[in-house]
Amino acid sequence: MDEIGASTLLLCKQCAAALVVEQGAKYATCEYCGTVNFLDKSEVVLHYAVRPTIDGDQAKASLRRWMAGNQTVKGLDTAARIDSQEFEFFPMWMARTEDRGKEVIHLKPAAALSIVGLGELRVPASDLMPYDDSLDDQAMKPTVPVTALRSWLTDDEGVAAGAIREISLVHLPIYQFKYYYKGQTYTALIDGATSQVFAAIYPSKFELPYLSIAGCGCLAYFVAAFIPLISTFTLGSNVVESAGVGIILYLMVAVVLAIPIFIIAASVSRKF
Ligand SMILES: [Zn+2]
Image (cartoon, rainbow, N blue to C red; front, side):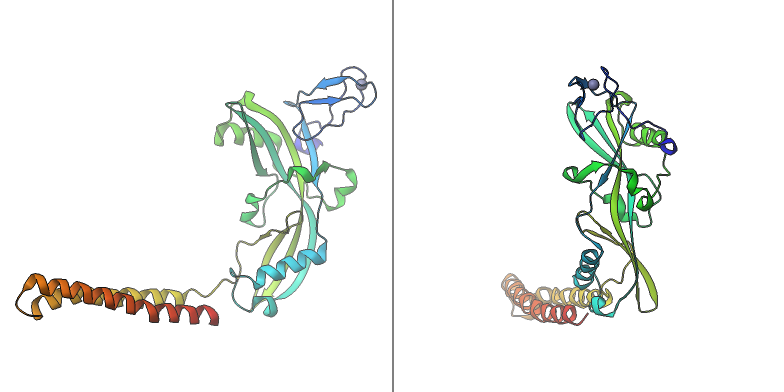
């Protein structure tokens, strides 16, 4: 793993056999001589991959479900044309650090992101497997060196240099889709372990009808607020009594106004 600048093998102190290291473990028992080794992980980088739990078809189905969901414009699932589908393992740095006795996990992309939201990827600890060279064809090479990760931890995350317990490179399974909708091409990524959809730009619900409903609603309530003022000076001679009647009138109007606004909003959300 020269390209990221660290070794990935931990050797038995007794017999120098390679140790099988569990994620987050402090000790590893040598499979050959049985020696229990304390793991000094401060200078090594472990390399894992997350096993995909869905195949390409299931990823596509997740994408379609997301398209049919509430975030996106109505009818996107039927109108969009999926043009391409690719699979790759995306590299993420994962650092375990200690903060006042508590373990903290930091994640940072180890390559340039095509979609900003990928920064929110999670690493499911249970699905980690040791990285295998057979994944090389599908794995994106890390471009962020481990030194950059260390400076990010100390400078931006406020981690003391001595508090870094373990640094791992984790390759995450990602499906990338390109789809076409109304003259534009969009990208969506599906996490191959969690089926979560990541999309920074997508055809979202048309906002204007909602804004105009909100605008009309505000105006209506603004006008209604004059009722107590007007009635105070037009109803009878007792100013206090007239003001009271005006406030009651206002409350009634306010309640009645809410009904058409609600109905219009509901019909708009059905339409778009
Ligand atoms: Zn040994």
